[in-house]
Image 1 (cartoon, rainbow, N blue to C red):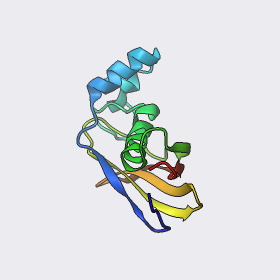
Image 2 (spheres, rainbow, N blue to C red):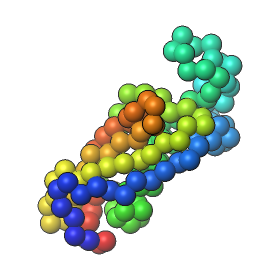
Image 3 (cartoon, rainbow, N blue to C red):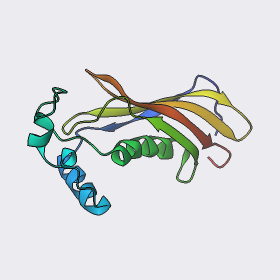
Image 4 (spheres, rainbow, N blue to C red):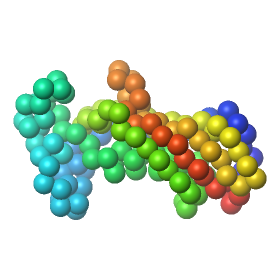
Length: 134
């Protein structure tokens, strides 16, 4: 794959973040935090998020992984570092996006983020992707 600084990574879209997936993930992870499955708990928070559950960090991160795998192939991610400045809520349409910031012979260094139309960037980070096999 020929990649250059400034190349835009094709976006990956989650049309509606699923509250059911959050509940399943909470069970799999044995995560007792009701923020992921109880809308009343979230509505009671002073953050003004309404009656919506909060997506687990690993699920939001997986949207970034899906984008990078679609672009460069499974197993291409060598490093992924994310911060979570905002929460992802059930029902939101989120878009994983990225841009190449630097390249070497085999690695693309990328700025990546997950955004929602009205709230902007929810997750932000950097990825190193092996482009030698693509």
